[in-house]
Image (cartoon, one colour):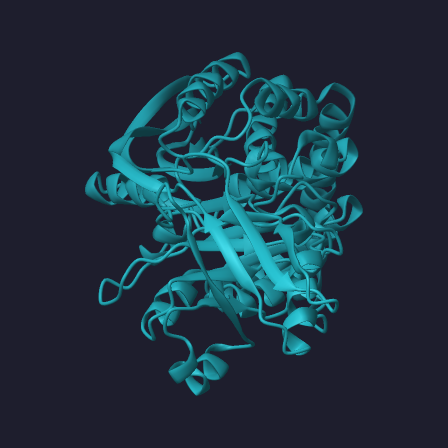
Length: 459
């Protein structure tokens, strides 16, 4: 009996070792293909330089959808289609301006322009603009304490990114509530507008936009984000008890919802064609820049996985869908529509993967799934480690696949190194030149490897 048990153990170890060797060899072939013949970087150049910012509802959104359809077809998808969804159509409407006025030490009236961007979904000031004294608050609690001083003023939210978080996404998660809820909280006490310290730790002066949301119980007031150098200047002036008046003009407004699309390519499964693996990123981006890291990188990585698998003549067991999601930035309509349709058709989705954290050096994956499945996926870490993404942690999949996760689908998100992401996030400097070719390709390699492993072994 002992000999039988021992023989069984030896055979099991041998089979596992053989499978791991096969997987290692195939993943190396994937890596070599991407690093030698990859199209992700050139595709990113085409998307960013020839189309640019791709805000939902804009002409560039339509061009990007047409581009995505053509590139998925050229990359070898078995079929490509557009999945319609209605998207919000917020328009910036012109240049955002804020000028600070104050008395210099010599009692001379002085002005200083501040570098600002209106928050996405915010309402403009009107053509005449507005002018009011500014009051600084450090938090919502500070706003509550100063509520009797807020009426008729512009509230300056000067809440800084917490520098002690090693993962800058934790800093963002901590601070972003002021962008989302700041206007309505200030309007509750009679503020006429807000100016917000940008969601970044970068030492430059680029402002960072991003979506805000209004509470219908209060007036919708204008809202802008300001670059950090100007934010620090404003803080310094106010700390000296200098009265500062801001003259603000923004033009943001909504047009009626319009038609947008998820762009979907597919490789049909050979054994389980009615079971789906989804991989994707979001095609839309904010308008002040080219949307290179957010999320052009995720888009071209998704397409590169398709191209590389086809180049290696890989036939998946499950049907793999490559999804270029619509309207993640200011509505999540694309991800919501994809999950709704999957649910309505009673589709069986076994896994979804997203890249929406920039095209930086990959470190690992965030896993939103049961502890049992996390344990299974974690056993693949040695296969991913040579390519940089062996750190597998619980939580942190991605916005567009979040609706699938709510339906019970195991999901994951690529976790690149986060240190530079919020230098570019939603800012004018999120351009093609900010993306490193090798880092972008390594992200695609690790995503392709994880898709391959899920396809082979299931979840």
